[in-house]
Image (tube, rainbow, N blue to C red; front, side, top):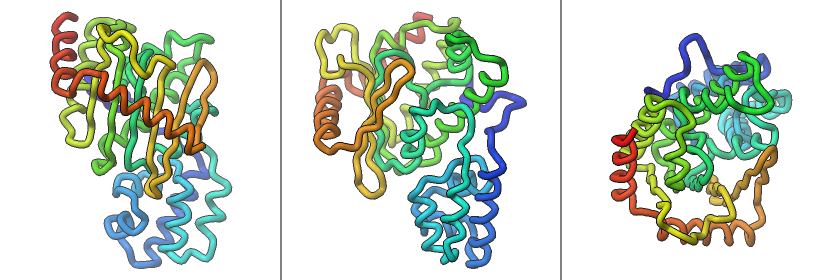
Amino acid sequence: MTDEVPKGSEPETSESLKAFGEVVKVFRKRAGLTQEQFAPLVGYSLPMVASIEQGRRLPSKGFVEKAEEVLDAFGVIRAAAKHLTRKAGLAKWFEEWAELEPQAVTLYTFESRLVPGLFQTPAYARTLFEEQIPAMGDDKIESNLVARVERANILTERPETIFSFIIEEHALRRQVADADVMRGQIDHILALGKRRNIDIQVMPQTRGHHAGLDGPLRLLETQENAWYAYCEGQETGQLISDPKVVSILQQRYARMRAQALSVEASVGLLREMRGAL
């Protein structure tokens, strides 16, 4: 199973996103810059810049300000950004975090419930959406699925970003779908773990108490070296910017990295799980 956008589905967009992308493109060409030249000037990857110009990705505030400055756009890019509407498929409480993710130079994730969203294959994610309560219509399932696949592109679009994932063993063993889907999911995780900037560790079931028992946790560092945390529950999510709270959560994550299996041992356990399916 590959992590591809389902056949017949394209990332959703909106007229405002497409219009913003055209504005950026016009000013970029006016400045005599190619996308390849423009991307490092604003501090974003070439695929990210291309996605924004095509109206497929919501630009971050940082991108808007940097593009305005680099292209000397007379305030037009900043003004166009005020009228942007988001793509469907993201919960409202998650939108602020989703906007920060593409800017991350460091991104840490601890998940104790399911395979993290950034790792989910379309087949695995589809099962979750199809079984969700309240039930979703087919169009909603497709829009959520496309948004999840599109969001996961940061794992390959940002090779300089350092990613760390700690996943509870029981979350990986939970068979939310049939054996073929679960084998494909584990294969996908193993493939991502081969990338030099992605570390994957499993928190073993034999580990009794550990520092993550309060629940799932995400941490990220922006290009400006600001740190944020995000915690999520049922129908709620909290973006945390208070340095004291973020520091506490960083300490917990650091302890979890020591308590979880090593990267090498985690790969071995994942292969063992796959073989048992």
